[in-house]
Length: 348
Image (cartoon, one colour):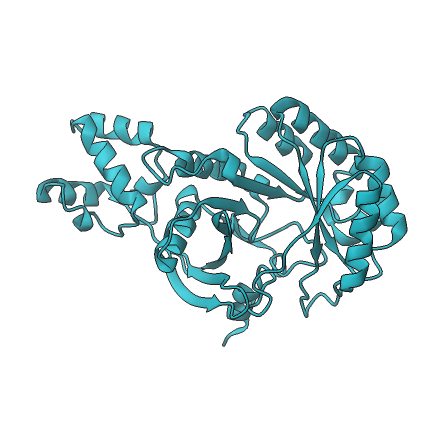
């Protein structure tokens, strides 16, 4: 995991890997723990690690890089205090992170890729396609930098920002293990939610790891005809295959699946669509999270009216499906994921 300088990315190393590296360098084991804890505090340079001897700091600086994000823009919602950040990556690309506050604590929604190749018809993140995957340390830094900028502890994580997490499987898995480490952020898996557009083989691969995180599937339509209109991925994995994968995930992990459903006016918000969802999901233990679509000017799709969303939710509930309507946060600060990055791309 070298950076452009040829140095190894130390922030991407798991505790046991860092300990093994330091052992090979002839360093005492406790030094690895010291460095790992410093990295979790968000230091940008080895010189900031004040309890390490100067000679050791210089030695480590010659071997390792500490890649860090730089804040380009910060927006704070006047309505609910939600904060949205645009971060510059070391190579000049940028991604977005959102801090959302709830009664139970603060949750960070992070990006997993620069851009996205999934092509969903309602999404700003996929305009321009995928540029590259984020590294594990870049995702970790989204969490660390956001917490530091806001001056508060991050209690939960949602991988629902720019990118498809399961399309960056290995880096995402490494990030999850880093952020879960007791000497690091120590955020439990049950406080982490991973959102996918439905990559079936990757869902099965994730299930086999028994991580106990929450799997959120971007469904957005209960049938192939409607879903194919909104999500090109449906051509590879139709709804039957996706539902089957979610059922396997539930039986393997014991964790119920949450289905994300963006309400698009006159596309997927009719009583007929609600009834199809009921037939598919009743009795499965799954949960449907209805979302009023965030308007993206380049897309042209419109959010369903609030009364339509409420009627849809009531119909699902009456049909025996557990349903919630997502609280709208940050609607006054470019709430649709990818809009800040898109705005920067348009700048001269």
